[in-house]
Length: 175
Image 1 (cartoon, rainbow, N blue to C red):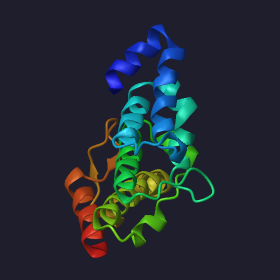
Image 2 (cartoon, rainbow, N blue to C red):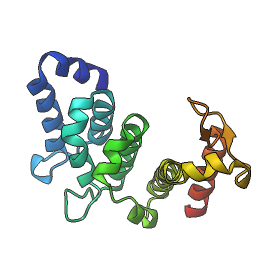
Image 3 (cartoon, rainbow, N blue to C red):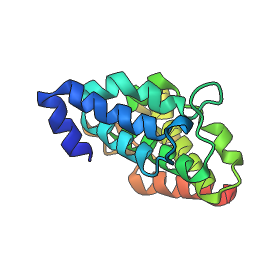
């Protein structure tokens, strides 16, 4: 769906917006539908098209906020957290600007929601922490032996296995 709507946006931006509006409508109580798969579809579309991401990422994030368009259904919350994670993979700056409220999901009654929230928080901290402390690690890498010089420009970066292990440990602790 993401690829198809991204291609549509290249020739018919309003048509692509209409697809996103329909997905949003499916998540609205007044629509009479449940919206299964709508958050995931929104996330994939936003990950694949920068213009749409600029317009709709804040709306995706609003589904995490009680004062916004909060999704109460735990299965939809799973999809929402997956969607935020998908956009984060490609456009972390958009997610950081939208500032989704993830921490409360750690208290969810659904173990899958707690695990997805823990994984997202770990991914957010990896990115924010690496950016915030990058100067320190570049000048004193021996202070953190878990870092390796593997970044795309020879910078210091957490090895993927370490990141996954930490995220998995947080998720296990929350389950």
